[in-house]
Length: 388
Image 1: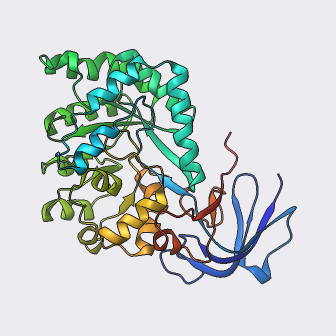
Image 2: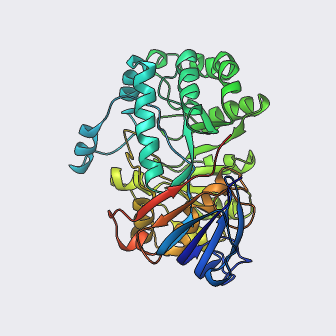
């Protein structure tokens, strides 16, 4: 394999606490990085960099691990900008517009869904994302959910079945029949095509008991659980996520001390999605309370057509710092290593020896520019390791 040394890095964030300043972010200054096609081989001072087959000069810019976007809904058709306008004029968000995306996605061709997904994936990658989770959930039929998972699998290994997104229109009068379909025929068809199972457990979607039934059934078929929880209202959904050892529980907009205590004593990551609060004018999650209690926090875009049409992790970081009392370092860690933990990955989200060679070079001398320049094009280039 070809080796490459990245030289003249002004500030290298590794997320390896054994490196550099020995902080959680493992920062090195005036640094270099040696990689091959797949992995990080060496990290250290620029003056000590070994020879390699190729040289990439970072020209005094900062380098960070590639972002790990652990919550997206990228496979869809249509758009809902009118709903955004209505919310900005005071209409409350209740998740009801999902049915519109279901109708548009069902009507779309494979090529239309694939092209739209590719466009959004490319936007994420251009902004420094190197690992992305992608959910189904916008067709809510057996064949439609299979189709969305197959398309998602063309772009990511982190594919999530979200057949329990909402009850589709044709089952509104027979809710139990839809849940039965989800945990039997749909799950049977979709389980071989996904890694994860997720449920939208919230007001207007699925109850805690319904979510438990779906996730327990999915786990029996080999899918690992994740959970949307407490975006619209408070419930026992976070307790359920901890009970089922979900890799992550996502949104957590409405959270109390009991929830925080449960999360802090668990391996379940609280994935916060501030793009949704920004786009719906809802309260932001209590990131500061969670972090101070020792909860592991991730940040993700929640890219979807209704409540968070966001494809910039830098923008998410800026919101988290400005509106959720996170430090720049906390937000950067949450969007890299935190996202990796939310996917239970130990090979991405950091730049220590052995990590995947996934990184972004910033058009800035410090990673703080991700929050300091909201809306700016801070990522100069994204580098992803070769994927088999």
